[in-house]
Image (tube, rainbow, N blue to C red; front, side, top):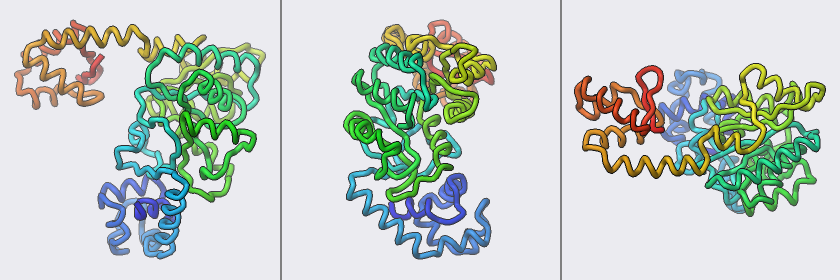
Length: 363
């Protein structure tokens, strides 16, 4: 783990370049043991940055970080390990190291961000409480936010009140709670949720890190809900990042004369967010309802009635989020006509769904 941590400490090497290096060398240790000449040839490194890998202080500091976090019971998650949030792995600019303390499952079945202004209204607070009560019916749901004042803090508090795990993504080391009046809240979240950061202990609070952490909030989640937001602010940044990651974005509409709803209204007007009025709207849109569970049971029953070739196709489609017809043909050894016939039958039974570009996925 020392070499993995060290990779984040090398001057001039960002997450994207670190991933390029890891794809080439597979293990971080091999990167540090490679020659300057070889490192210089890697995209994004060059002769100047390659010399930074030979700085002995980098490995020394990485070892200190490992010891400090182990002492404090903080997990260090590396993006190539199974414990790393799988949704973040899909994001090109995600960090390669995360520091985590808590009990929440970072790979829960459902991850939902609730974000918004630091200066919320009573309307925003009521929407959160109402929404959270409705979310209690969703199994394995983790509420994610940024532990900031306003909407973030209210989302965390309401999740705890409704006995749901909640995760705070912070922009500094886990030895700091910012704002300081959220210390009690942060402690409660460690027992029913957790705190997550890309920054090690003793990192300074820097303003530039706060918008950077928004990409983690967006990438961690299946969807983001903007409760209240001005036209500018962290919630608007997060919503655009979420869209860039092909995640769903929802927003509560507000009065046209209320600046704290201007951002939500703008997202809705530009078709960048789905208009919602309750938590039930989110559950229905995301298919996180009891009806969806009934459909899964129905699918299981239908599956047992399929012939051998159809069961094979279902198994192949289940293994991936989407799969191309050509790959199905190759792995099933079916002719074009038989494959098309079986896929049509499975689609008519509401087991699979055809997507543009001859792609298929499970319903």
